[in-house]
Length: 401
Image 1 (tube, rainbow, N blue to C red):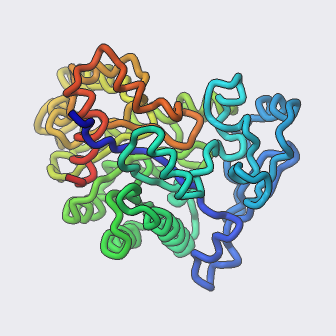
Image 2 (cartoon, rainbow, N blue to C red; image 1 turned 135 degrees about the horizontal axis):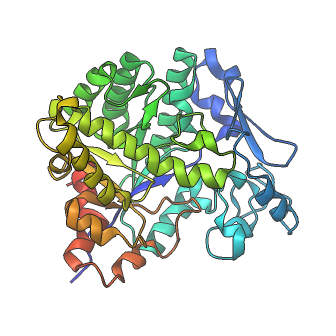
Image 3 (cartoon, one colour; image 1 turned 120 degrees about the vertical axis):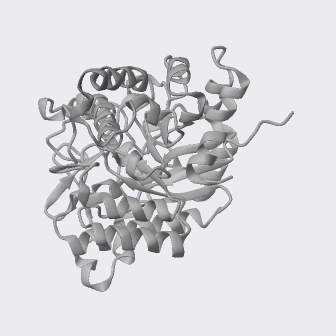
């Protein structure tokens, strides 16, 4: 019997920053992101007067260790070092080739040519055994931190147009997710509508929180209402080093700590806001995906929320049921890493229909080309559960059925 469809729910392309001005209107071309190397030789992007990734999050020790090796004279030039992306030497590619394969934030963590080359990406999909990739951008996660609202919208449009253009090269393989300037809700709604109508996106990405606002803030109600009306999946995705709020990251200044803490903690807070803040009660057909933080935290967090609700339900009047019941209704999906030991626990608590397969291609978190195989070879999951994780659940989430 043939294996069912495999859908990878969290993958990335890297925006073409050397010529991103092509995707901006004339008024903003001079404000296109600028790429350069800092004094450590680390690639930075200058946009709206700030550096990305945030230079206060250091990877200097790792970079110095890499510089002590033969790094092939890294450059951000597409034409340099044939076969490598943005001049990355082979040892920056993903894998377990010593510590060089474990570093995020060096050369934008791009380890496969498919981050900018759709033909190479299709070949990687075939090697992995993936049928469809859901495609996000990278620098686009900074959109909700931009101060100039008009530029934020122009930046989102440029990012969305590029991702859609990339996906159009293999529309049966690549499905685009858009970003919106959620700090400007009317503009976010307009851009969401445009990307659905004109670009055919299958989802919209928002951060776990905005400065001063959690996801249950009433200002966001019109956005949720429109996403529900469009039957559009809402993917919640944090961006490390983008100046988005990062729970716990204010205590650290190293990329390792910020990355390991920021992703899951922000998703815990986002889930708390959406469930306990009554968003799922108010918008019962809306679907949320919690991405790039694994799923093992869900079991503990369900217990924690239920325990608080048992003692303090009067403090969260927007809920009509205990938190775990909302998670079991099929509105919430959680991206998993294929080797997570706690997947069976999440299956038993949140349900087998809540977990979606995510490779995080082409980032260092992934294990190309073994992500699909890792799930298929697991002995602690039934074939039915594996099929749900690898494709069935993602098809429901993104409306691909």
